[in-house]
Length: 193
Image (tube, rainbow, N blue to C red; front, side):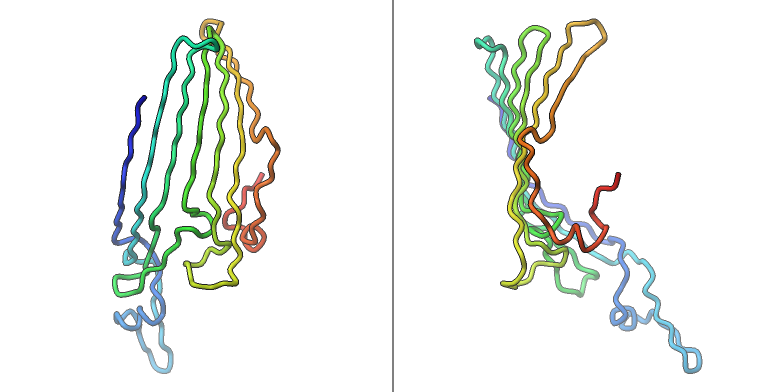
């Protein structure tokens, strides 16, 4: 048995963003020529980002069983926070548990190796989230998308020198992911092709 637990925290300053018109004016990033005023909101290194979470990786290997050498592995990432702000004077905007940044992702993988054959399955789960790409707000009307789990299986044969054959099925149980309004409202996160 082998396991590791990693708590991590990433703080990034000077992230690239465009200042708001108000913050650009407050920092003097404007010119006035006659009746025309130009406010400069071009990209700048003024934003900040903070992300913190927990990674768990646990493995258990059983050798010499009736079905071969069995390995069971669990991988979990849990986000405590995922927040940004446009500049150091702005309020933090929390994005953990919103669209594209669910609170957790987990994968349980079981494989068995016997001779040249390997058989495996992976159960992957993505946590539910608020159906918005905006920062988290206390809003009872924000729709919640349920978590999603799917099962992938693979069979491999490595009985030939310098050749490995694999056959896999992704989403064996044919479960559709839950519907999100964000997929229909913009092309920001869609898979094309």
